[in-house]
Image (tube, rainbow, N blue to C red; front, side, top):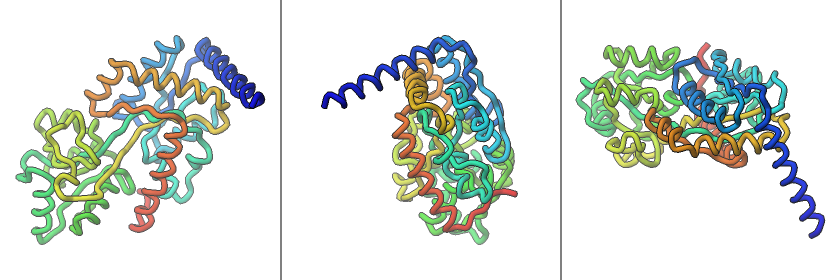
Length: 322
């Protein structure tokens, strides 16, 4: 018993010393994102970075490394020193879907990275052009079922969360849609506005402004509960369509070689930043739902979602865009 008490005391002291040393570090903390500047992940990263900089009293910069379906950003972090000064912020796609989708992926998230904290939940919302007569997702599905030709539904690419949400919708309703993959969500949105496609699943932050501005109509939330920023939009389950449930979460990771005490210090700092009322309000206004976690909780989520999406990708033989 005495040995256990000493061990716990030593661990607590080590964590306290690491936290103090980390807070006194004047070297910039770098948050690498696998996405371009101006997008939803970049917005969340910069919002969190601003507060982290104030809390830690050190520079925190966001470094955009888009490309190779997230691999460029991931590998940049793995090539950096595992000293807690470089974090990777990513969505569920690059973290949990790519290992199955990409046959020759240069990293394995579970093996190569240590979870720091969840940052935000981002559920998918199904949107259509305002000219579409459907008032909700169930009406849209009924109309699609009555059509002789399958309705064209866009996505941001093969194996993306919007694509997998569409696959879930097909399996739940037994209605076949025409999947139209684009190289990113912006091109998909352009064609949705122009009427070339009939609908798209998208992260709420990616379409919140268009929904609020009356340019797009939200028909259903792909989650177990309604989105706080869109309280009038029913979930698919509320409309009698089950098992359409996606979460394109954003989370922070570091190299698996990073000392556990530094991971714990980073986790504490991120959780403080997300608990700040101004940060939470800013994220919620954008459509992202701020959500922190322990490293262990994020590790469990990563494993569960890796298994969940791997089963769907393999069952449908989905391949990444070439």
